[in-house]
Length: 154
Image (cartoon, rainbow, N blue to C red; front, side, top):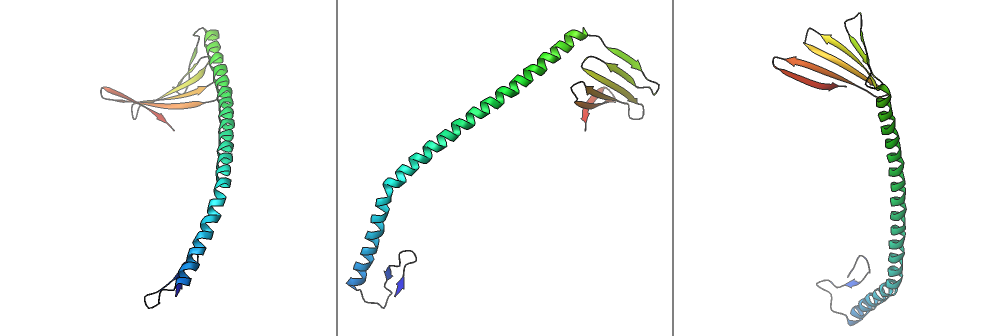
């Protein structure tokens, strides 16, 4: 006679006779396990409520932290925008342009320095923008017949 994997119930095989004692023993095991499970249900319900409340509290705390982080970031952005506006206002649109010996041109404003070089071989202009906030970018402008293509260079 085989036994079930989990509850070890007796499983009669084809050549075994039906035995009422085996049936009753299996029924007792099932009854005992169901009773144990039913007795744990109230505890599981309490635990699930507890877990739900803990998750809700954690979610609320994360939301508060995220709002604080966003507020700090927004304050930084506002500060940077105010500084940029002040820099623009202070400069009154003034800029200085220098024609360099190597053929390049440098234009400096209150916000950036632009260095422009010309490449006759591929008919392109390379503009290097160095911003006063420490960032930079380089643009390549290529003249092809009647069109102009501008791309940002790594």
